[in-house]
Length: 294
Image 1 (cartoon, rainbow, N blue to C red):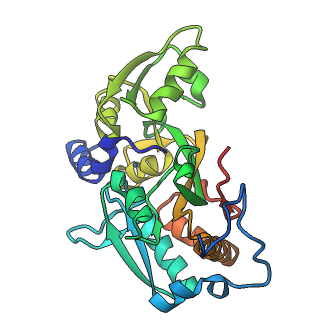
Image 2 (tube, rainbow, N blue to C red):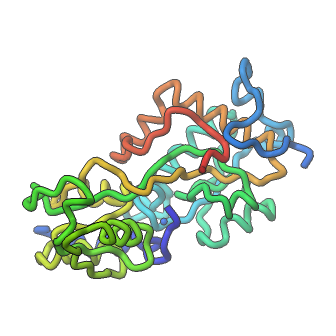
């Protein structure tokens, strides 16, 4: 998703919200491809790695902490963890490189990549047409918004249509607000939509029965279910879009090696193990693609 600013500090807000309810975001390469890198059959990811990257011995990856469980700090430390850091480590290992992972502001990730401060960006970044004007994406995750209710789903909600005529809370400025409003336009009996500052404060409205449901990004919803046990996530995802590993346009060779490394991880099952560790296997992709967003 396109991460709203409020979600960049979600890690801290989540702790507050959960505590409050304790009972409850070129010479190296070829031109970018439309939906897949170069023909890499027969070569391993390490064999595809450009000479300059082999010589450096490191893979410099930037992320932006604040969107758990995708990227966050281990409790009480400054050690980066989450889906993106774990996948970055696995990709670096496939390439035969040492991972050098750093945290940066989300807005500074693509400029930093273009300036050569990083080799890759892995930070829950939506593969969008606008961003593809600046970078290429190796798409590794596909996700959208999911409906969340109180545990047990007391209202028996099964789909977006079931939100019609009910009290629903949605985060300001989010793609999930747009999903809710689009559905509301189709409702015979309209929803009563209230807007929260972010996902954690929206869940407080569920806790106090001021709303019966909300729509939250799938990875974030899974985190809340795991950490709180007070909520339930419906399986269907809405407004899905691919997230990509960003690579500078000039680094087509590195892009192709990363695509191959990701495919090797998918084929070996190690990719799915990482996602399942954080309960986000529902957003797994079957094939590593490049610039595949429509």
